[in-house]
Length: 352
Ligand SMILES: Cc1cc2nc3c(=O)[nH]c(=O)nc-3n(C[C@H](O)[C@H](O)[C@H](O)COP(=O)(O)OP(=O)(O)OC[C@H]3O[C@@H](n4cnc5c(N)ncnc54)[C@H](O)[C@@H]3O)c2cc1C
Image (spheres, rainbow, N blue to C red):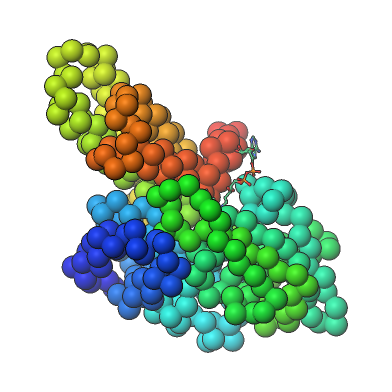
């Protein structure tokens, strides 16, 4: 269980030192180690997960993805790891001594497992992995990677590889501004040899476990996107009032009324999905629906904001900082699967 006061102080510290922390992989790593000491990665209470997601919003540090380790990757590991693998890594992951990352996306595409073209070769009980994984969150400071690849029979496999392995190289990706905390990078391995102690799960359990984990990731992205929308909405109302536009441009208020209603509707549906998340129900369809609607709202609101604020929207240092909102909205639109992919999942639930 987390101590909310300590977590609040810690997140405020991150906000106050944001620029220094995101510019330095070592500092990012230290922050994650410190987060572990505050039990942020011990997922015993889903209400605490919601608290953590909300407090990222409170301090506007949407690019510190502690939820990825807490809600997505440790539960995945607990589901598919062997007893020996758990004995070796689980305690360290939970106390933040180790940071992990999930590497799926390849140059050929990240939204479907069908797009994974890398193949692991099997010789005498050993595995040789050659792959390049792009846009991996935490890559710049992770200690262990869950590398998702396939074998010659097209079956999904996950290998647990430590970043200190000499055959693995990591490169920081130059991303757009305000998502620096995600520590995005690419991971390359060339004939990296591992054995069965590095292999996670079995063919039967991997695909379903990964799909479940991605649903949780989408729910977390949706929570952040809704928090970003709330922040944008409050900022823009304040900005308009400050410029005394309220009497002059009624259409602006009409536009904001639309967003006010959409935000209320989004939150009402979010409360239902949040309840499912807290009670550990299957979020496969509902997470896709809430991510789709929250991200759509964030994308629309950020472009309306850019238009309404006119020339002020290009000032990086203004309170409006539209570049930050546009970048965050687009980042969360793609993370965990794009809008088209969410629609594809939703359309299956409609057909069912
Ligand atoms: C902030 C951020 C963090 C990320 N973190 C990670 C991470 O930790 N690990 C990781 O492995 N990846 C990560 N990614 C990558 C992310 O998972 C992919 O960007 C996402 O899955 C989409 O894949 P893609 O960009 O390769 O697009 P593609 O899959 O190549 O798709 C290209 C275009 O085709 C569209 N499309 C795809 N499928 C369909 C379809 N069936 N019907 C219609 N249109 C379709 C897409 O919407 C998109 O517009 C991250 C991305 C971002 C932005």
